[in-house]
Image 1 (cartoon, rainbow, N blue to C red):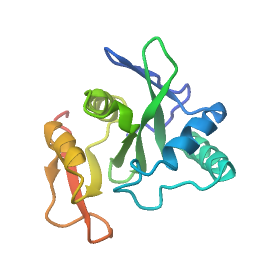
Image 2: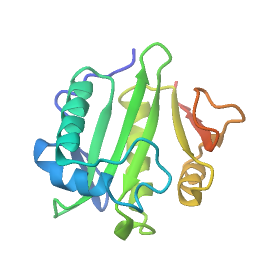
Image 3: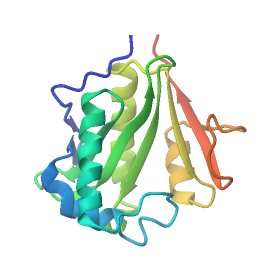
Image 4: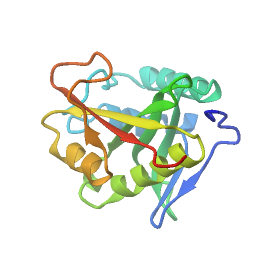
Length: 179
């Protein structure tokens, strides 16, 4: 059975990172991140234009976590609570044992291996704790860093997207080797 009870919230740790729960007090960091020009380069419907929009987003995500529809972690460095970005599973399908991975990272932390570390950790969590069978990820066809990250983590590019997306999006999937 697919596990989507995220209470208590699973805090994940890597060598350099802590993936923690999104808090209401993260609103300024999330707003800054989601309104950043570089962060939005390859994203659709991501940009926030007001702190109120960000606060509504945080409330929605917290409800979706409670309802087992989404799980989103804030990425921080060990020893610091500084916001680096987010990584999540969303569009969780209990019937199909699958979820979609999403991730963003503050540009000043690009090319340091942080997102690879975070993604590896949630992939392991998704397959071993949640019992997912498939993890999907959609990225912009020109987002070379995201494509490299997915390929490095053994995702395979799909020839036909699993859902309707913009013509500039490509789909990747990873299937569990467990069970």
